[in-house]
Length: 228
Image (cartoon, rainbow, N blue to C red; front, side, top):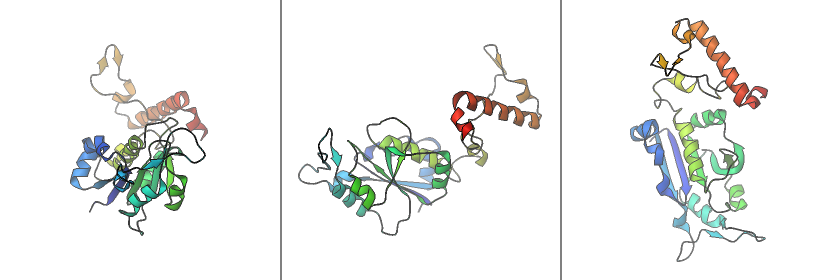
């Protein structure tokens, strides 16, 4: 059994693994470094049409996923002693950060719940102890794409996925700054040269240049990070 396990509860299981079945994440999936199981909430829908939603209490637009249907789906799969974090992808959740991603990657995996329509009955989130997580201040059609984002961010940090551990350390947000610029061959491209310091072989000067550039980019694009 893979050490890092993800269970995704969704109305659209065919959306998985999607891009996670390709590149490094896909190779890790094939090698058993991590596992992914999807569960169709509609399997526990009600009546002939497998209904999973109903009109919102108090009136209003849209539909709301029923607590009893979602609970039945969860309870049919998850063991009572499963200690993995239970996360619902939601624009009103706490923002996903690199620090949280690293913490999740160091655990046993995650249980992800993907809502649709106007969302899921609040009582389900309370009764099954789900934490809401957001990948940004915008609205998607459902939680599936957000779940793919969260999983990709976690899986790429698992031991054995990336060739060098340092690849996951010298990146944006890992040091509280945006990442410095990168260059490679050719030495000159359309009149633009690689900065000479990067060709000097002086690692002290190179590190200092990269730090300076990281601060400059952060100040220009994400000054909020410098305040933090």
